[in-house]
Image (cartoon, rainbow, N blue to C red; front, side, top):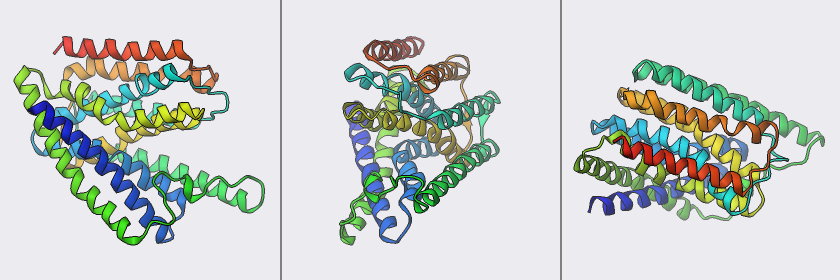
Length: 322
């Protein structure tokens, strides 16, 4: 029954997160907030809402290991599985992708997170440092978007910032539907998080394994499903930049926003196993992206098989050491 409730909580979380994004995006656009700002803030935070709620809920219920495991496991899954499966299905051509800046920002966020984690605990001072780094990245992205908008007005660049390009945007959505999406998201997120955290904790105790291991595997895999769906569709549409950008952006927000905000609720201890193994796997997986970002290697089916196989091996090692 715990597995059924965990699955139900995950489904509610994913649906509620999508509903909140749709409602918030369309309300913001109706109120005249520029589409680029919506993309940089509301969509980015909204799609990370399930992970955020899980982290906050787990800390509130005294199982902070679930929060740490979820973030580290999700980042590893995002690269090895979320990019591996689309590469296996359709391949990803990165020749036209220019994600060097965002990749370097992601690596910076990863290294900052690791340095703070080796202190043994992430509490509010470390959380504020993570949020400050996020603010710098968002500020840089906002300035770049403003420069692009000025260039468009001057006729120097093509406009690619239409409202329809923002995830969940529907210019014709009536107000009652906007409010309905917001309410469904705000009600569903805490309900789904509560179900998933309680069930995951019960499963961990039943099998005698730590909540951190459940976070690294079951919860991390589940919360990576939206990113997986996005990247598969992007690969089928030959939009490698969308797939790569989705993973890089998601990983940055996981490390900086989710752990940063969750640490303000309560301290997050870092287990020795995370320090000795899982953080290094996350770093190694992140470094695997370098050839595709800088040298534009083609991420074909062979790479897809390799990345997916590495993720399966990683999960088996984590479960085997539990």
